[in-house]
Length: 108
Image (cartoon, rainbow, N blue to C red):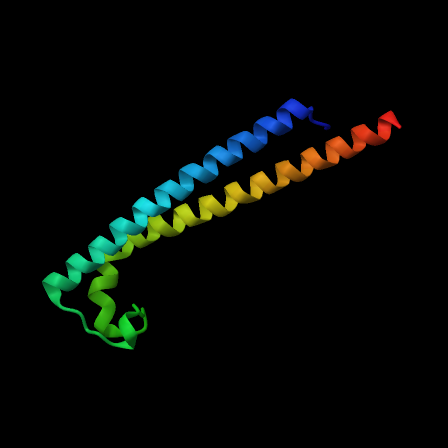
């Protein structure tokens, strides 16, 4: 089914709006995640191995991973939403380009 130019532009607009909302939410979620990490390390100490990188393979980090897991999962979900919004935006933009090219060839 061929969509009109107005429908395609609306898809682009909505995807752009979703991208901005996801990016803003990701900034907030990253701040919450980092704050939770610092809070945990302040209360329980930092094992300080692997150059400050959390490794799920290391038993020393089991507590902090368990403590921050809900925030990390929320961050990953939002990252996936951002990826999907960018993909919708790209597809809608390509649809608009295709629509305009077909419109130009019809007028020639």
